Image (tube, rainbow, N blue to C red; front, side):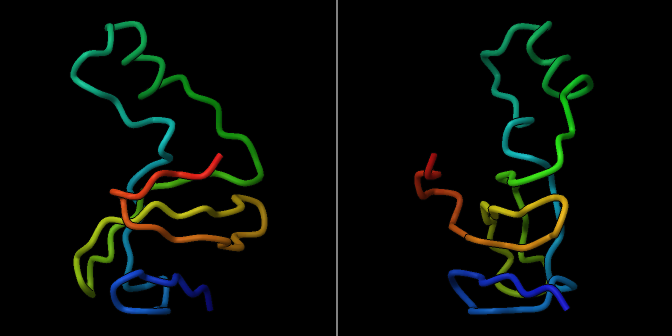
Length: 87
């Protein structure tokens, strides 16, 4: 069972969370149309570590930045969205 350490609720089963998207695919209102299309539809899907946006849907309803390996699914960090993402 995959556990995600919610900063508000502590470790919880993945079933309580909803995956939204990789952080690299989040668009802003100031992006140009080509950049927007690239981020939404033509981005790469590499195997390995990735920062992702998740929501604790069946818990505190908070949004999290989760650092997860897309190959092994191992989670190494879960941060509130308002915290700076480490490089």
